[in-house]
Length: 347
Image (cartoon, rainbow, N blue to C red):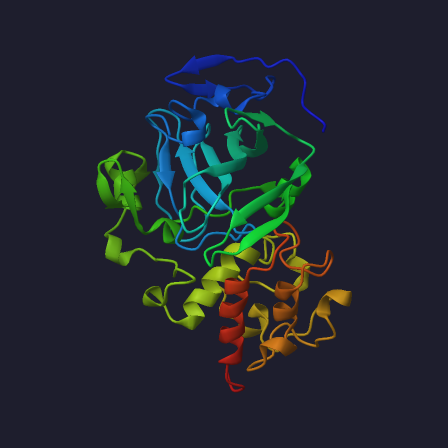
């Protein structure tokens, strides 16, 4: 396993925050960032590190995730209706991937696999991956990627085992590429517009950020867009939930600014053109990834749609998304299958 072995230069430490310069190397160990309080495996954030959740998160082979954000002391982010928030210089986004031994008891006897950081430096985001040790006491910077066997009991009580793939730095850049710049994917106001159980109690995340001085110009919550929860029918109809699912899982590439812009398939929540969404759209180039299907979405017939085919396969070069999953997301596939099958031919 290739490791980054250069000497680490910590330029300044203030209130638990690691301050770095372009000439310095990033910390070799996750603990040096000063993100977690006490025993690291508890994943308890330090003061000033804010936990958050998304309404509809990215599927990553059924991994459970802890999400944190740390803004530089005294800084804040401006409200914007669409797109990922414009975080200030020095911001840090933290996402930890883990598996509980038994999904019927989430959070207990968990194995932490990796923690991914996005650090904003000189108006550019840097992607860093830290792989946790077997003792679950710390994680070490890994630039070459890795894989590991994962075992767990799923929600139905069945034993599961598969090879979990940790991406290398180039793969991180591939998924986070917007207009040839590395960018975050998830934290938009519509995704953050939900309640969260903080130490102080349950509160809307955006309101909490405003109260903590982390967000400016927040309008009334009822006027803020809200992404539907993909598996909660009370949050939106089948179209809203399917579009939310495709947006978070696919639109980081399938958008005008993304790596798959030449495909003509654009899957952001805001896209209104039905052909761009894929309905009756012939692919620009799909090759064997089409599975013999002729259009991206065939109204009323999921199994005849390229989108369905690429979601239900795990074959390299055919599956979508290409990176970030080795397994079929059965529940997500069921949602998209239902969405396509309910489409009427005159839509």
